[in-house]
Amino acid sequence: MNEETYVVKFLGIPFNLTNVISGLVAFAIVFCLVYALSRNPKLRPTGKQNVLEWLIDFTNGIVSSNIPGEQGKKFNLFAFVLFLFIFVSNQIGLIVEVIVGGVTYVKSPTSDPMVTMSLALMVLLLTHFFGVKRFGAKGYLVNSYLRPVSFLLPVEILEEFTNFLTLSFRLYGNIFAGEVLLLFIGSIAKSHGLVTSVVMLPLEMIWQGFSVFIGSIQAYVFVTLSMVYLSQKIEKE
Amino acid sequence: MLSHFVIGAATGLYLGDLLFYLISFILLMLLVKHFAWGPITKMMDSRADKISNDLDYAEKSRDEASKLQAQRQQALDASQTEAAGIVSDARENGEKQRQTIVANAEDSAKTLKANAAKDIEQERKDALKGAQDDVAALSIEIASKIIQKELKADDHKALVDSYIEGLGKQNGAR
Image (tube, rainbow over all chains, first blue to last red; front, side, top):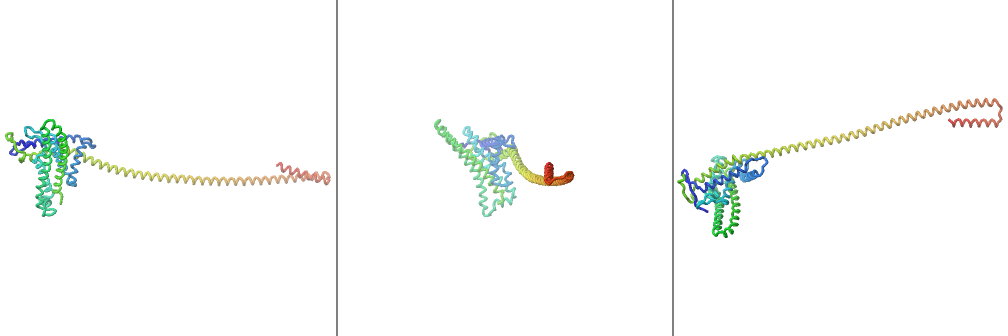
């Protein structure tokens, strides 16, 4: 894992160029994928349309199992895009890792804590926003922190922060560890020429396969937990 | 802007990334919604509508079919009873007709028989009358013959016998 990154200051705000490029790649892949799959939709779905509809049904299922009824419907798109983005982000680092002159340009965006924290922050802000929208400011505070019993208030407040940290660092840790091990195996393979390469190749492939699995699971977990937090804020306790 | 390139540690807090991801995520959501989510979910909804409509329609046509089936069954039953009625009517009519025909035949046979008996009786009477007339004529003839010549007792007897014989022959011939 490479620690060197380009940082660009724009309007006095620092941007990490690695994250920006990787993020752009992920966004572009997600959009192209969805765009390609959604061409020429028909009433009787075929091929690629089935794939997209299966994906939509899958994320809709995550939403409706946590937020039942009409209320959950407005989060369907959010869950769909979030799932696809995290899934694609998790897989990017397994396929390409562009490191030029000791600086990483493309990797899994989700292997950076800043990115996962951004996503977690976005989700948690949404939960608070919809909580207030549903119950009003006072109702939101009562529903979120004083129900079902008021003496749990400190725990509830603490939970807001732990939710944020666990949500972001679970994803970050899993993907970061996967990439570190991948690069580590890669560096061993390169260390002694052909011999180590031949030995390490199957190991690398096994770990890549396992990382695909982990990346999928983590995307699912992230979206599921986001919906759980959302439902905690917008469902009456 | 490029003059601000610095090489920093990855652990730094880059607020810009947060903004970048927030904005691009929202942008991605809008794009996906416009290009993929909208058309596909619209198609899925319209398919769900179509399926539910088709199910309703199938339900309705099944009801109609079973109604028609019941009607047909009813009509079939009715026509069967009608047919049975027609057959029994025909049989009854036939029986009645047979009885009338038989009765008529019996009547006409009776009348014929009665006529025949009457005819026979008449003829018998006629015959008897004819015989009486013959006997009378013969008696007269015999008497005249007796008167014409004297007869012995034997001759007398032979004469009577021959007469009776002739009478019987005459009767048998008729």
